[in-house]
Amino acid sequence: MSTTTFSQLVDVHYTPLYRFALSLARNQADAGDLVQQTFYIWATKGHALREVSKAKSWLFTTLYREFLRVRRREGLSTSIEDLQPSEQDVAAEEIDRARNMDANTVMLALQSVDEVFRAPLTLFYLDDLTYQEIADTLDVPIGTVMSRLSRGKAQLRVSLKKPEKNAQKVIPFNQTKKGHAS
Amino acid sequence: MNNDEAKFILSAYRPSGRDSNDARFTEALKQARQDPALNEWLAQAQALDAVVMDKLAQIVPPAGLREQILAGGKVSQKAPPRRRHLGAWLALAASVIVVFAVSEVWLGQKVQAAQHNYAEFAVNDMHNGGHHPPQGQGMEEALVKLASSDLHSMSGLELSFNEMKAGGCRTVKCGEREAIELCFNRDGTWYHLYVMPRKVSRGPLLAKSKPYFLAMSDSVAAVWTDGVFDYAVVSPKGLNDLKGLAG
Image (tube, rainbow over all chains, first blue to last red; front, side, top):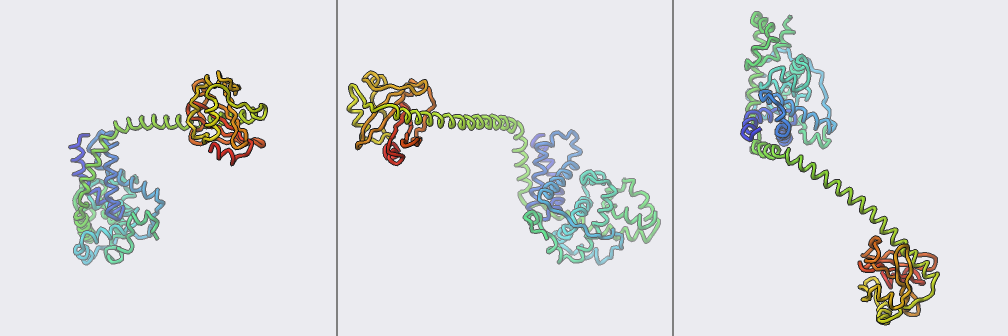
């Protein structure tokens, strides 16, 4: 792959990849590392991918696997709260409240969602991948993606209602790696 | 499909229209168009989704990340051929290190064995023989040197092996190697010095930095080399005495 092609690939995908990574890793430094690592793997192995059209899906999948690999190595686990799917009506105040929040506060709310729901939820909001691609990225059936999405949205709505609590709830990835998770 | 099932499916329907051609949503969308309450629910849910999407789109990567990725990519793209070579070099280096390590161990063991054998030979020969002061031309000078010098730091005897041999010095066999015995007296004590030329022998080099000491019964031997000769000196007065002489 030429330097120009690689540069174009980075320009197109590094921003949504970073947003996905930030949602997963919950801090800028680890998110940046994840994105860099993803492109590093592409630069060393991506040339084996014959269909460049699949590069986007490949990059998201690789980033997610890298995140899981690091998290598994650190022995972290995610608790799953038993929330009902998001089928309740959305009140107009909820929409207004979210609209008045800054992007970082909304990201913090997203980061407070349990990881198993957070990954599909972020990919949903990034709007970059089809459902099949999201399912492939997360290596789960589409039905599971939709189920997790619904529950993830329920958690997000709770978090958006209490943004001041999210800062306490969200433990950056680099701190959980040091064993500070409660 | 009831409305709960439709809500479950429609909660995954993105407001951007990306999923408009996805057949999974067709039936639920049709139901929403026909049911005002469901349609209202969908509109509100999508409004919130649109806000979150918009907020997420405002997140920008930190400055410099793009440049770091590109720089890393350039290095990585050039890396494979180099890494293959590097791998081969690393493998070769590892092999060399292993060979050296094995050689070092093997040589170390061999040197230690040679030192031990030479020391043992010297002690045994001293016990079996009498005193044999150097004889022949130039030997007086050698005797004075032996009687007054630090043997270990002494650089050769300034006499060739053949000169010592021709001068009448006693020669003995240490295995396949021939050594000359030079007995000298220092402060009333007789010491036995054995000298083996390295050029004649092909035995392993003895420890050059410091002597190897071997205590046997009431005698102690020290062996070392200066690269020209392999030396062994035996003292009947113990280790400390010999360390003062050849330490």
